[in-house]
Amino acid sequence: MSKNIVEKIEKIVRDKCLEEGNPYGERYWRYHIQSVVKIGRELAEKYGADVEIVEIAALLHDFARISEREWEKIHHIKGAEIAFELLNELNYPKDRIVRIQKCILTHTKRDGDVNRESIEQRILADSDAFSHIRNFTNLLFYTYNIAKMDVDEGRLWVLNEVEEYWGKISTQSKIYIEEDYRVIKKALSI
Image (cartoon, rainbow, N blue to C red; front, top):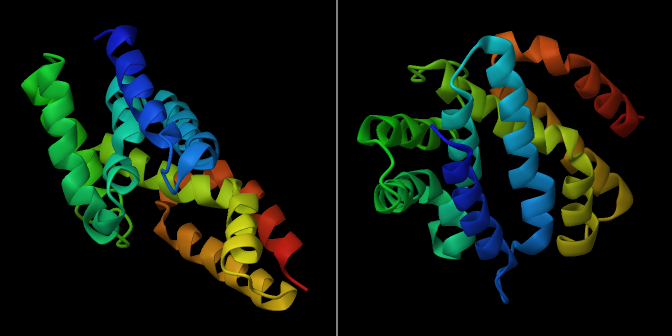
C-alpha cells in the first residue's frame, strides 16, 4: 500500500506510549513495540509474507494494553477493535484491516501454529514472543526494579519466562533465533 499509512500508525502508537502517565511508557515503545516490528519485518521478508500487514499488526498488537490497563487480559480483542476503528478512519482497505485484526486476535495464543490461518498471523505471534526473549534485559528490569525479586528468584523467573516464550514460537521461526535463545538461556543458568 504505502509507507505513509505505516508512518501514521507508528506515530499514533508511539505518542500513546509516550503520553504522560502511561505506565508502559517509552521503555515499552523502545524495547517491545519497535522490536516486534523489526523482527516481524525480518521474518516477513524471509517468508515472502505481506510486510505491510505484519508491520501494522506489530505496531497495533498491544495498543489496547497501552491504552487501558484494565484491558490487559483482553488486549488482543480490544486491540482488534481499535485497529478496525483507526484503519477505517485512515481509509485503509477493509480486506486488509480484517487480515490485521486476525493477526492481533491470535498473537497471544499459546498453542503454536494452531488457529493461525496465515503466515502473517504466525509471524506476529513469533515476533511478539521472540521480542521478549531478545530483550530479556527488559524482563530483568521488571524483575529487579518493579517486582523487587532477589537475585536468584529473579534469575529463575526470567529463565522461566524465556522458556515460556520459546514454547510459543513456531518451529519454522525457531531456526532463525535458536542461537540467541541458547546464549540467553546459558547466561541465565547456573
